[in-house]
Every structure is written in structure tokens, then in C-alpha cells.
Image 1: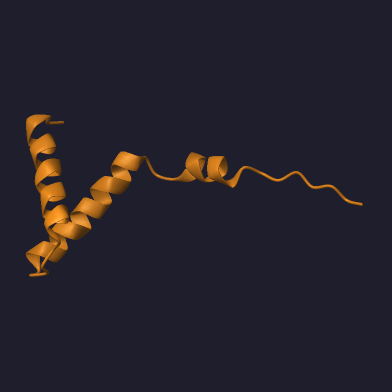
Image 2: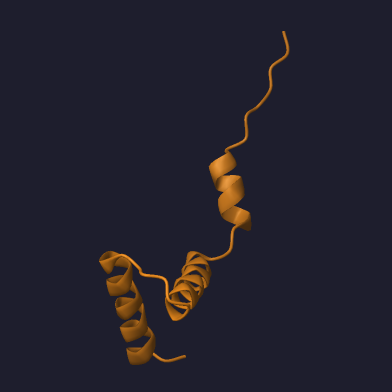
Length: 61
């Protein structure tokens, strides 16, 4: 019988994924572009965009 050690895929993925903040910025850019191109967005998404913009305005780089 052969035993194999199973890796923790979650931890392995966590090590190589982009920072969560960078991922959210990328998603925000896509959503803003969709809105600029006339796509109707859900109200919750509109609120999220406003929320992100407020944070980026109040806390500059």
C-alpha cells in the first residue's frame, strides 16, 4: 500500500495569488469600465463602487 501526503492546496494557492487588495482593484476597474460602456449595474454594485471611490479619495497614496 502506497501512502501519499496530501498538500494543503488552499495554503499553496494563497502563497501565489495576488494580494487581495490588488485583486479587488482589478475587479473595480472592470466594473467601472462596464458602467462607462453603458451597462446597468445592480444597486449593490453601484454602492460598492461609491464606497471604494470614497476610500481612495479620503486615503490617497
